[in-house]
Picture 1 (cartoon, helix red, strand yellow):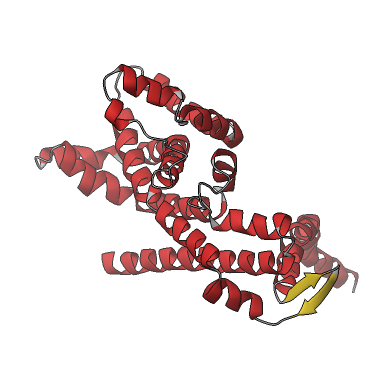
Picture 2 (picture 1 turned 180 degrees about the vertical axis):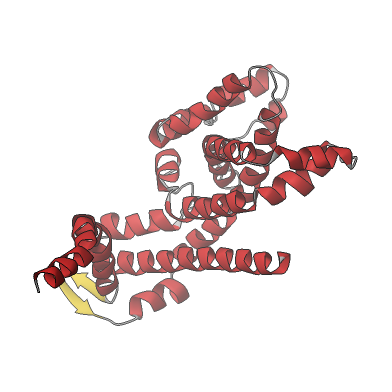
Length: 296
């Protein structure tokens, strides 16, 4: 009998070890998510919540042009993903070629990633002004025709923010792919050389196929960056302007919650954003699974 009790305790013992972490996860992640879902069905006025069902969702999807515009801006910013992917792989391959001072170049390229996004945003908001140093340098080298109000013109503001995102986030991809390339079996390269493969053929037929899992992770990571982690860039550099040309979903949630005091609407938009991220990640995993099945 005692042995049975001892055996039962041993079965439960691992769960006791993870219980504190599990409680912490529930408090920090699960509870706020459940509360957010509940609040998304209410509108708050005078400290009281009025149940409105799916009216918040209907308004955001069908009537709120600013939210639809913010969604389109997020979709437009997705363009940074293929740019980051191509640049990261290409630079990582070059730095893995045993060139001189490769470690120095890696360190220099990684510096932007360790700088705070707030600092990056403040610095570039000064550099990209009409009277900023970038336009000053363009004028000095005879390229005055390229001078633009990079953050003050609705035509260029979002692309300027995207350029800053690429500049900072590129370093992580480079380091990630350098590590992935280092794990590739060198015999594959030697065999391809014997078969007469040139540098580009090795890149497309050896390096990139061997980096499929790393590429999949990097794409998913950048999906989350685009939909959930670029608020600071936009808020610091443009605050959504000019004329809402850089308003994104995160900023719209912030405006609903803290500027318009519409917590129910903010919760509804946060849930929609969560579902969008989930769908994108699911589709990515689905495509990866299909590709793996076809490869076999």
